[in-house]
Length: 169
Image (cartoon, helix red, strand yellow):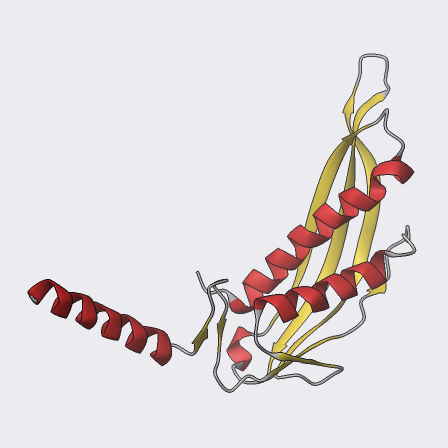
């Protein structure tokens, strides 16, 4: 009987702790209970080298991610939490050169400027540039692997900016 009482006390204490700290999800998001909406603006591609589908893909993937990771309602603009910004760089450059001055490895990198606004807790708002990249063999045709490389890069960028915004580890 004593063991059961300890378990009950631990469960009650755990529930009280979770409830007292705002909305906590199993994804690690710590969102104020007054936050009900989130908005994701369209991310224009302002890079010198423009990849035609990158803006739409990044915007759509970010919207989908916040829907999956939070219980907030996605609205067009002026959410309690807001993501906006632009793609500031998209480049491919060699990173490993052979003895015959040929590239062995190339790097595809994407840089995104993010402005996160938290209307409920303004001190958690931020402006920051995030960069991610993927390396690939220079013998491969970029057009054949670009989509999968971008999926990987976008996923990592979104995780980075989301964690900075609402995960307080």
